[in-house]
Image (cartoon, rainbow, N blue to C red; front, top):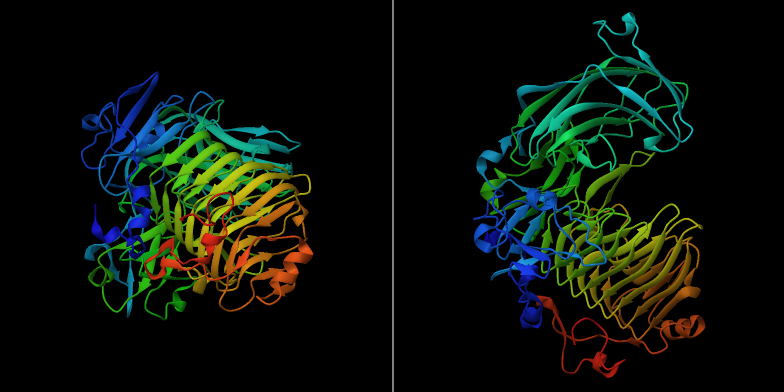
Length: 630
């Protein structure tokens, strides 16, 4: 393992030894289930994976392998994988478990590209260094997609598809004209697609087309997917789609294939995006197999740059002219290029340079019956573990750090919004557990369940986790009024230094809180925040924003410590140390809680065990003190 990947925060003493040494058995069979092994150095995806000596090698193989309920995938400790893990579904008969085997540190799953060599950077102006701009080397025409397109309509969408008139383009090429009367409300309500080609995992395909539209718009999405049900996604665009305007323009979309398939379909999703009354002229072209000049393409936003494992990070800017201070950087989405202000070639100044890409390190959308154990996730610019509609997910004894910061969207006023949580359960999550994990240096929340649209979030527990240097330790909200949140438990967690992480100084909305309750309009029941330690925040330990839904909230046996500033911000009411007792009595919260310094063994070294004289030890219920580490 590269020692430069070790962040300073891992210099944690013996209180965590029991967490670090747990592992999975590497036996081949357990009843009808199998244990598959993954070895980044000695493995080979052509092997069967059933022993350490015949281990697989790549995340791509893990994500596409045919697993059965109860199977385990075990990564060799001390090794590193880059990219994204897409887990598979288990069932009530048994979860799919992703864990570790062997000796050494937890397996590292990194959502970043490493640019550590001097040749990775080139001068781009006085004091500015840049990565190589994206280039594709065409290898062959993979498929001619000029003809054979069809239009699918549902959900009330009304649109016609006819051949493009001869005068439709400067070159009078073949194509199609779409005249939209109503696009529907969702992207799938209007789909333009073509079938009849193949893709191979790990290869890049470049699709070119010409288009114009009487009303400028940006398509909802374009994906390579299975031709029939279930509509499995084979490849997503490597970069955001560009606007189609009133003048003819050529567009190129690159698709990195995530799996091999013989029944691929290219679909342009127009529902809810193509304006009613608009006329879209569309001239599809060729699908070429290409080779990218970037080892790990910077095809999505670079949300953070982590130098030497974390003592220093880059400062994201949105224009070239804003690169004024050392470490300022700008990501150019058109060139897939980063430009960084540095007094010399960055690779000569730092041992390691990690460019965090805007992807979840683990993308578990729609997955169920999955367990993660003893994994170390770092350097992604979206979520460490993210995705909506999940159930029966367990995350146990994992580390997550230096996550988030990617560009989520730009507001109508032109201001960009960044995002990224450690573990997020998005709309429709239920029956999930996060236990015994460590989370630090995360742009938004370490832990969160949240959602929009009609959905149910229920039976989610966060227990015995240690969190530090995140903007929020725990964030919750759910919308709309038709939604329901029920039985959420945040208990026995140790939360320290909210708002002191890498992202706080770069945020336009600094808001360091341990517990952040944003606008919540869902019907809410049985929400518990109990037996936790909340120690030190830049703004306050807890904030309630929006309407007060907290008749459903139970808070008790917590430890609060805020050396300066308010303990709580309850809507517009600031509650300081002197007002806390009266507030607790009025609200009926925290009748058995304590306002005191928890007295950790060595907080400077992130050892958050309780010192022998800690006042927390006197507040035991039931039978153990608050926080994650006794």
